[in-house]
Image: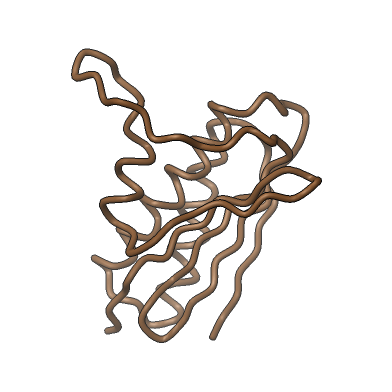
Length: 129
């Protein structure tokens, strides 16, 4: 099992930083390309949701991922107590699909709350090379 961690700024550009770092790590762990694409999409959506839906602009986000034999668990921690909620998707709006995408790709996802905020996590099945 391998664990990666990263602290990023509370800004939209951080999603790209997270995608690249996780992808590089998963390549080194022998994860298949299609699975890497799934994991980085889920990670990007979790970071994007934290940036868009939390007000802690001066704070940083903690991102971690655990590479297990057949899954990768991605976690994004922020200081907001506001829980993520899937929203009704409006075909005329550009956003609002983040958690639906996570739910469609991940085998499971959830939230762990603490006094410091929350951690949103998702478990993604992966194949190996």
